[in-house]
Amino acid sequence: MEPKTRRWILISGALATTAIVGVGGVLLWSGSRTVVVADEPAKPAETPQQVANSFLTKAFSGPASAAVFTDAPAAATTALEATRTGMSTSSFQATVAKAEPPPADATSTELTAAVTWTMPSTTTLKYDVKIAMKRVDGAWKVHWDPSLVHPQLTEGASLTYRKALADGALLGRDGKPLVPGAIPDALYKTITGVVDVRGTDGWEVGISAGGAFTALDGKKPEGGEKITVTLDPARQAAAQAAVDALPQGAAIVAIEASTSEVLAVAQNKSLSGTNPFVGRYAPGSTMKIVTAAAVMNAGLAQSGTAVPCPAKATIGTRTISNAGFGHDSLPFHTAFALSCNTTFGELGSKLGPNALPDMAKRFGLGADWTVPGAETNTGKVPPASGDQRVENSFGQGNVVASPFGMALVAATVVSGRTPAPTLLRGKPSQPNDVAAGPPAAVLAPLRAMMREVVTSGTAKQLAGIPGLAGKTGTAEAGGGTEHGWFVGYQNNVAFAVFVENAGSSASALNATAAFLK
Image 1 (tube, rainbow, N blue to C red):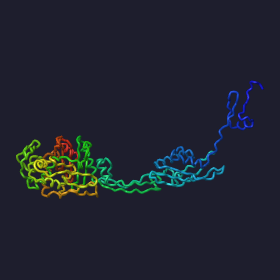
Image 2: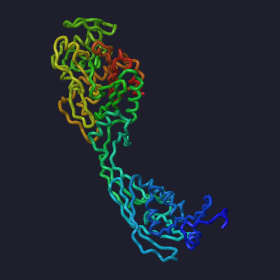
Image 3: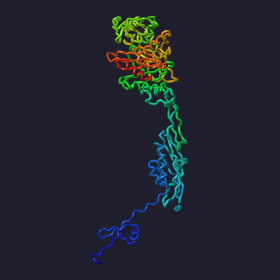
């Protein structure tokens, strides 16, 4: 053998072996020798059961990956994706039943799988599916059909899980649902904390096809209450817009006088830490509604009685002034319309210690109700004597009222009877400390006096609003800027408008105009 002759080296050392391996091997050139390396043994073809298992394992975790095991990948992907979406967070599990391998020359066979869906409600949906297998180009494939997802599924349909919503609702007086944001958040939370409008949702699983839904299983919801809130959506929106237009803290409460149903309750973001049902403030000259009724009831003056209205007067040890005006004498109804403090301070000093508290309660101020859906506090008018009684007669001193309380005063002027404030229909308020309505003899003159305030008195800027009557008020606020009020009614709608630290009643009058128009 020549020294430079290259030699073949057989790794296995046997010529016969070389001949066998060479059929399926690769020759690798390595320097002066060639190495024969055997290929990996060919994998045996997957059985129908293995292919079916691979399909079901990935069916709803990766529909596109599962679809490659079918003979119609595009259609399978679309259908599987639709059911994955429809079943939301439900989990899927399937087990293929053991079956004898088909004959070597078989081109089709059928398997059975047990399917279990575990839904968000923790309930399970179980059923069996038939899996038709076909040999395609020598490999087993799942023959695609929508019934692989569910036996009743057809082309274009999907399996769907959804909540069955409880049939309860919080409705406005127009019959339409009230949603968060339509009324003050605090009030919405208070109402929904009192009544179960939500109920308990149920669930259902079924087949969705187009707009149709065929239920397969489910649990019916337990319906909540359908509660009508007395608020009027249009008036509520108008009240909210009126207070939102003001930079100062502001609130409006409106009440239907004939029924005592609350029509609107609004406050802006600047009025924080309280709400119109419970926030209490000095009512200022709006208190003169109550004082005038007490004075007429006591016989100290009637609507046409001539009374003095000096620009300044010392009553007891208290010096009282009007807002830059004075008159030697004028009718009592005009003193009311012009809001003459000296007139009311003098007459108030002649009332008994309990005359104002008793009359206030007959108008709902200082009275107390348990009102389902809201915490309320109308205000307080304590018995008083001396200087305190003088100051209380024109809404200063230790008298306080909430916008809700003053709206009740206006509603009582209109209706003439004890109010029974209601926020939720079918759930009447319970009286705790309530008096009989005001004396009938004082109501007609009081209505005329409140109308005069608008036609020629301190609210004459609102004279163009038909049927409007009321009383303005400016209330000292503990040495700070005065609060502004307007309390009144238009036909059957009674209301109170309050503006914090307004300096005068002008802002309250502007808000009233915006609310009513």
